[in-house]
Image (cartoon, rainbow, N blue to C red; front, side, top):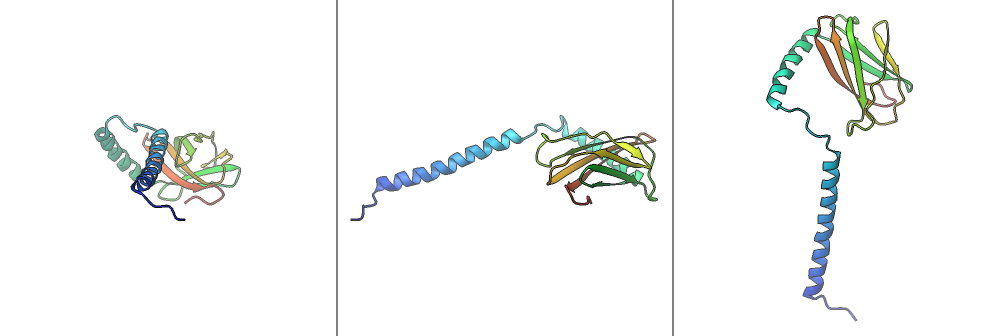
Length: 154
C-alpha cells in the first residue's frame, strides 16, 4: 500500500534540500576565505601610478624572457631587441603554483654565457615563474612566465 504524501513530508524534503545547499555554500565560502592570500597593496592608486612608470621603463628595455625545464634544471634566458644577452645587475625568480603560495621556491641560479640555470625538482602540473632582473642602468624588469612541468615554456 502506497503512503500518502502529506504537507509534512513535503516540508521535510524541502528543508533537507535547502539544508544541503546551505551546508555546501558555507563549506565553499570557508575554503575560499581560507585560501585568499590577503591584501596585495595598501593604496591601489599609488600602485597603479608606479606600475605605469615601471611598465614604460621596462618596455624601453625591449627585453624578452624565456624559460625551460628539462626535468632537473630550470633555465632562464633574457634577450634584448638584438637577440643578445643584456648585462644584468641581478636576476631572481620565484617558482610557484598559480593557485597558492605554499610551494613557492626561489632557486639559486648560476650564470654561464648569459643563461641562468638552477637545479630544481618540479612536480607535474602548472607553475608560474616570476622573473625579476635589474638592468645596468637600474631599470627593473619583471615578467611572469607560465609553465607546465615537462613542457617547453612560452
